Image (tube, rainbow, N blue to C red; front, side, top):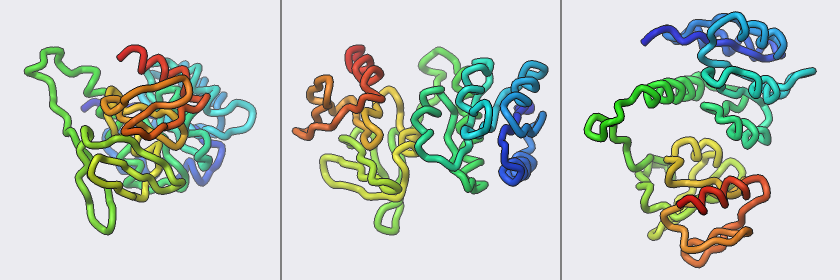
Length: 237
């Protein structure tokens, strides 16, 4: 694989140093520059071909979200922030991933792998017989063991702060995970975020209105933030 040109953008020196050390551990990453503000990063982006930005959100003068809207669409973004409430805005900008500070190296590596997967998907052959078949399940930690969860068996997922409940026809699994992280692991053509606290399996949807989605007689609310996207997705099915 060719080198991945990346830029770090964070107003906190300590945060930049941590990311710089992480980047140095991955041979395929080439750090073009570590920037202390959005304007400096904007200048670097105009002078170089940047593949990936590690972009803090809450910065003075120009926020990371504002900078993200000006970045070339060919460049990808991994948001880094100490504020969980920015996750929705980050994913609305089609970020590869959203890393919550303090960032562990294994979580950073997971985000890099997601970025690499997006690059591979772009170059996948169009013929069905040559395409790569992805797993139809994930493993989650529940009751001190890793439990296999098949996508087709999931009804919906509910967030409880740092925990989530995964509802299936047979049981309810509780695991320590954020709903934003689990959303990234689910196939987007099958699962849809309808509320900050709920993800539904579109294949299990029995009915819907402008206010809720019904699955197995459970009315799951559609929030104002997600309503436009949810109704469009449901209409297009």
